[in-house]
Image (cartoon, rainbow, N blue to C red; front, side, top):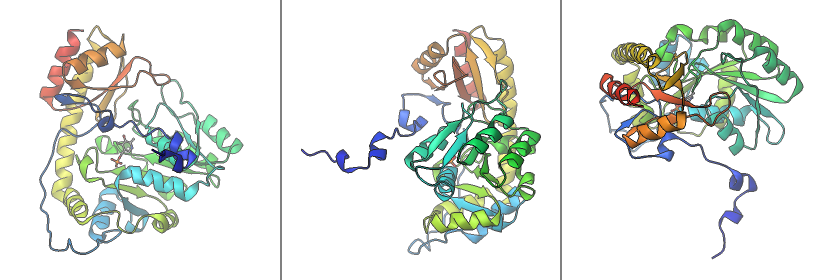
Length: 354
Ligand SMILES: *Cc1c(COP(=O)(O)O)cnc(C)c1O
C-alpha cells in the first residue's frame, strides 16, 4: 500500500488538529468541558426554499444582529461560527511564510491552529500577572516583527478576565497602521457591560468577533459574526465561501435574535451568572482548591492543589471538566463550565470529597 499522506503538503502532515472537547470525547453524564449552554430551545423551520441556494449574508439576520450589537449592517459579517471568522481574518491579512499573528497565552487554542493551518507563525506575548494583556510588550512586538493580527480574547478563555478599555486603546494606538486587533467576544453576552464595541468607531483597526455558540445556546448550528470597519468587511467578503450560512441556520439565528429570543438569553445569562457566583463562593471553601480566578464568562478557572487528580477523579464520576494544567502560568488549573443548579450541586459535592 502506498502512503496517501505522502501526497499531502508538508504543512498539513505536520499539523496537530484542535483538541476540541468533542474530539477528546470521554464517557460522562455531566459535560462541563466546552463552555456550552445547559439550555436548548426549539425553533420553527420553513423548508419551502431548501431547493434554492441561500443568501451569502441573509439580510434579515444581518439586520437583527446589527441591532442587537448596536452597529450598522455594513459593519457586520456572518460566518460559520466565529472560528470561521478567525480563519477568514488570518487568510485576509497574513501572507504565508512572512506575516505573524500575536497571542497572549493561556488563551483560546484556535488562533494558533488556524494560523498553523495557513502557514502563519504565531508569536506569544505573555500577559501580566493578573492575565491582563501586556500592552507595552504587545506594541513593542508589533514594532519589531511582521505581526498583522493581535488576538485579544475578552472574556479570555480559559482565565475568565476581560481586557480593560484603556489597555485595549493603548494596543490599538500602538499598532495602528501595522496590525489589526481582534477582540474575541465569544462570552461577552454574560457581561455585556464590558464590550469594547464602542471603540470600533474610533479605532478602524479594531475587529470584534461574536458567536451564538455560548450564551445563545446554539453551538450546534455554527453561527458567528464579525464587526469591523466596512473596508475590512468588504475584504472578508472577497474570500468567504458563497453560501456560509444555510437556510436552517439563518432561520434559527433570526429567531434567536428576535426580541423574544434576546430576552430569553438575558434571563438565562442572569441565571448562569447567579449560579456562577454561588459556585465560586462554595469553591473557595473547599480544601482541594487553592485559587479561583475572576470569572466573566460562563466558566470558572480553578487552581487545585492537584489539578490532574481532580480532573481524573471527577471524570471517573462521569463529570467531564477541562484540564488546563499543562499550559503556561496555569499549572494545576481546571476549567469548569457553569451548568444547571443541579449539575453544579453535584460538582461541589464531589469536589468536597476530594
Ligand atoms: C467557543 C469559542 C469560540 C468559538 O465560537 P464558534 O462560534 O462556535 O466557532 C470562539 N472564541 C472563543 C474564545 C471561544 O471560547
